[in-house]
Image 1 (cartoon, rainbow, N blue to C red):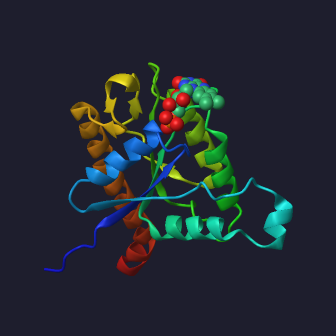
Image 2: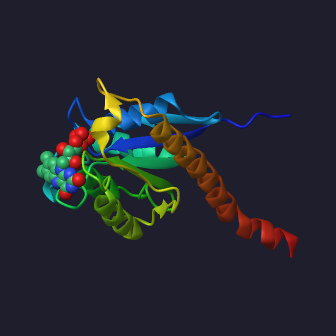
Length: 198
Ligand SMILES: Cc1cc2nc3c(=O)[nH]c(=O)nc-3n(C[C@H](O)[C@H](O)[C@H](O)COP(=O)(O)O)c2cc1C
């Protein structure tokens, strides 16, 4: 029997700081990925502010590299804080740059979201804004499970996610996202199969 290659999920964190809770949650996804799934970390800290003059002169290497990694991944996982009830500028900026690549790497891609905040709502408002952005990008966001990690002060220690329930929720999200990416692949292949059968 041939063994399936592990599914690759590219995690894009929406915070740049070293002590980021969201980067720590992304690291927990890497460390606790279920069998058959590999989580990789994207880098967005080197991406300049979007400027069409810069684009016209040539896409920065940091943007084309990110686009290539998104293209190569089976799914993307946004791990983002909420800033002023929305998506942080650094993440929106990275998305805006990548959206100008052709072909546009987010199009048709499976995507998931999770986020961490010290407050109660666990980035709920930012997550729904990100889903709205995904409509134009033709991202296919997984609906459930929603992973909104609030009250982070009690769930992280020394820069690491230590809360067992939260780690389980992240694993459930990764499993569901892996299955979702496979379902989308099958759907993309279906028309040819149907045509051959008729
Ligand atoms: C500019 C700014 C805006 C923020 N707005 C919100 C907000 O709307 N909702 C919220 O829950 N937390 C907000 N916060 C607090 C962040 O949730 C908190 O700083 C969080 O730790 C940032 O994520 P990180 O640890 O991954 O860097 C804001 C923080 C900053 C710096």
